[in-house]
Length: 117
Image 1: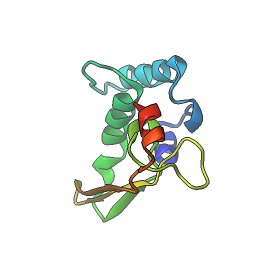
Image 2: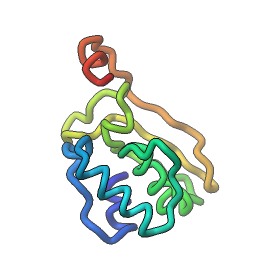
Image 3: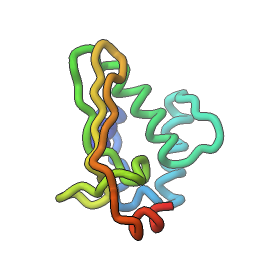
Image 4: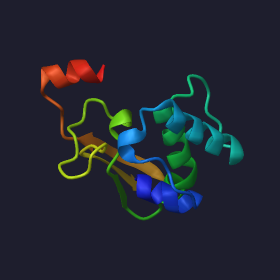
């Protein structure tokens, strides 16, 4: 998902393991303003990314399309990606411009859940 967003925007985005920083939030906020993407308060990093993905990626998903590798910041209850730090095991299926499926491998470690919140 983040690689597709980078390609659509034509810019290098913060690394997935740095998305929790205020600097990353400011970058996504600036991108939303620059491209006229509306995002009401609270303008958190996860909401800003979600709005950008909706504006640049989801609107192009006519044929069946899986959006994968969501950032951890957007999916606190999903298990972490097995090989890429900062991502989760989550996917969304889009078809004919509509989201049909939103699923993830559930994070079931209570200590990690507590840390995520």
